[in-house]
Length: 117
Image (cartoon, rainbow, N blue to C red; front, side, top):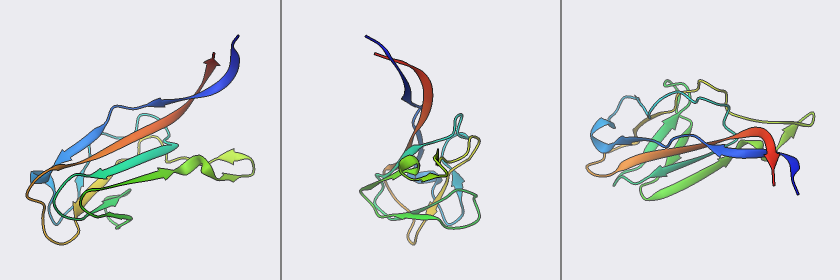
C-alpha cells in the first residue's frame, strides 16, 4: 500500500579540514542545492569554531567534539514550514585558537514531495 507523503532526502555531506579554518571565514563546501529543513553541524576539530550563514556575522558556536542539529521545520508560520534557503553557503572560522587537527562537517536534509510506501 502506498501513501502520498513528503520524503526527506539528504544532500552530499560538506566538510572542511582544520588547515582551512583560520581567523577569517572559509566556506564549508558548496551552496545548498535545495532548501534545508534539517542540518547537523559536527566539529571534529580540536578547537571551538563559529559558523556563519552569510560569511560576515557569527551565528553558531560549536565546541570541539560536538554535533549540533537544527530542525528548521519544527516550527511553522501560517501553516508553512520553515527552511534555510536554497543557495545558502555556510562558512566557518576559528572561535579563538585555530584547530590543529580534524575537520568540520555539515549534513543537510530537504523535503521532497513524493510517494512513500
